[in-house]
Length: 188
Image (cartoon, rainbow, N blue to C red):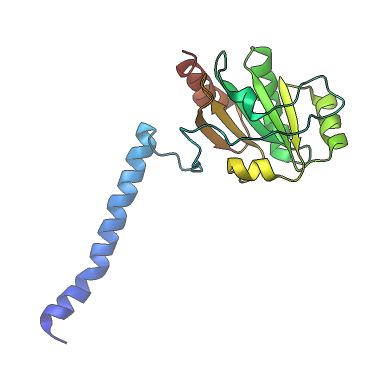
């Protein structure tokens, strides 16, 4: 091995460490400015209309079913929430969805891989925040939307374009720091 090769091999770990440090610094700067969300899950649907779908309603509630046609030419931004009665994080986020409902924000729901009687019991016990509600028992529509798991929430603008996606429960912080500013931004 030549001395030049030894020097290159000696400094290679330092170069790798320096590149990692630069990448870490960039990530920290992105977190500081809000351009990088470490909990964010990428979605191919951001900036696009949702896929076409027609789902059956949840029998036993007076809420009409949700279809893709209901997500076009809206009076304002709407929230679409995939949820299930068996989902513990869905219980955690439910008070925030009820709060949005009381404030007049249209919240549409899709019960994901849930038995209708369980979904109905969940809503009767906790309240129904949904203006439109369907059930996706096989989970095919959720797959088309790119849902990783429940709860998962999308914000659509007036034209029905998906502008934001959140995987996980909507907490008070998410409501205040993400959803409310986005609702204001996409209201006009």
